[in-house]
Image (cartoon, rainbow, N blue to C red; front, side, top):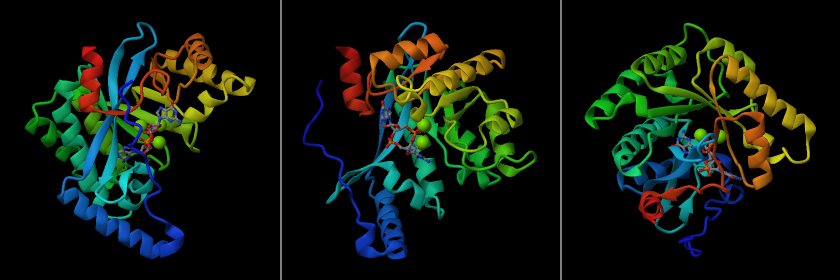
Length: 271
Ligand code: C2E
Ligand code: MG
Ligand code: MG
Ligand code: MG
């Protein structure tokens, strides 16, 4: 492994020290500057086909390389970006970069995480299409991952955007399936292409019969829809074996490949 031990992830900002509101505004200001100064980067984690155990796509995961504080994970800034127009700028940057990187990734497709906040704009799908056009990207090679945290109302703007993307050939995935409250209702309301089972189910697979049964049941439902099922957070051989048995179609997790910058990714695939 060519992993640099020195590249640590730090708890970048101490909310207690600043107070919640001041903390939020501080990060917002810094992030706005970071977008201008090109301090963000994408790391890519491979997703494997369960049938062939070859890489079929990569998920793009944003990181903030702060000049003083080091590498900041998305959990520390995406939520704050979602409270303003910053999420739209961040999202556009992520899509454009992922499309530009796709030829070098060496996989069929790339998955980007899209915040429900981005889908609230009526022109989202049109702007998305413009980026694909600019970067000469085939829409069928893009997967959009959305979390089930926000209700998808029939006839709503978010739903219209998803339908427009899907009509273009973009595949739509439900992320963290089972972690929210709307899982089954989501499946009823929209023709998703991919279900990504939340990693908490995968983590409990060895000890919990219930979790194993739920994973199998999701795979059964998915097979008859038909929808692809990707298991997230695969960390052990035991989990891998159980997931294959349950019938997942895709596998993603530290056991198979960690998120990595594109340079390392290319070196790894050349070896
Ligand atoms: P997610 O979309 O569910 O991404 C998977 C997360 O699980 C990633 O964390 C990944 O590093 C981590 N992971 C992958 N395999 C394993 C494993 O085997 N074990 C464990 N413990 N974790 C694993 P990361 O990169 O910190 O991202 C966290 C979340 O931040 C993402 O969850 C996604 O919701 C959000 N996010 C990341 N990039 C973007 C982005 O560009 N835009 C938006 N809106 N959200 C993003
Ligand atoms: Mg995701
Ligand atoms: Mg997830
Ligand atoms: Mg998530």
